[in-house]
Each structure stands twice: as structure tokens, then as C-alpha cells.
Length: 178
Image (cartoon, rainbow, N blue to C red; front, side, top):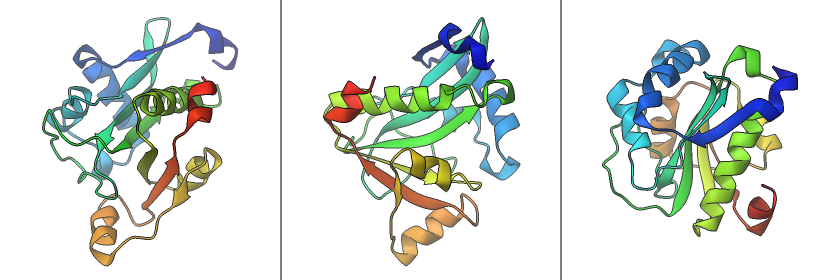
């Protein structure tokens, strides 16, 4: 897969991709982090959706769920998003890469593309909840951990004991980098 970098196509995620993306989600995450089809699809159909997939041949090898959202107010795990809503920050909800594609750079390509799109649209920052020990990965991509209130900490804890809110600014460098 590492030599197939140029054969990986990135495109917006559509509802027809849902079953394949959910299969990848089941392979990538602990059962308590899995979201049902309704919650998953609400991210794809949100008016400020930035959801992407990566395909190699005809196989989905990675996906990224992201959408515009309110700052420092991440959605609850499994929450159905309304089709409309504020889009003050880019909220990166989920990134999953199939085992054969890990190490190919496809995750970084998805992130770079979504950050550039959000910056072009005028969003000035991105947020996410790092789960399952992923904070070091996100730190390499410019994200830093955010200090949060006890109420928000309790909400984030539903994503796992080591979950943490992280953020990074978006700027012209994100646009130029793609």
C-alpha cells in the first residue's frame, strides 16, 4: 500500500459510502466508540460537512468525518447532528485508516485537505477529541491539548479515559500546503 500513494483518490464522502465506512470504523475503534448509521450519516449530510474518503482501486482505505461546529462544545458521542448549525470551527470527529493503508500518509493527506478546505471557507481553527492514545499523532499535526472546565471534561471522558480536547489554528499555510 505504501507504494500506492499516487493511486489513492480522495473525494467527499456521500451516503452511499456509509456501509464501507462503518465497516472500517468497526475495525479501527473499540466498541464503545462506534456510532450507529443515523449519527454517522448526520455528519455526512450536515450543511457544513467536510467528510472525506480515500479509495485505492475500488476499496475504501480511510475516511475522515469533520464538520463545522461551535467552539469548545464537541458533540456527544453518538449524537445526531441537525442538518444545519453554527460553523465557527472545524470539528474533526473521526479519522480511520485501514491497516493495509497505515503508514502510507493517507491520514495526513485527508487532514491536510480538510484543513485547507476549512481555512478557505474562513474557519480560523480546528478542534477534535483525541482518543485511544492518539494525542501524540495529532500533536505532530499541530494540535495542542486544551484546558477544559470540569463539565466539559466529564463530556469528553465519555470518549475514553485518555480522551482530550485538542485544537490548532487554521491559516494561509494550510491552504498553501495542499
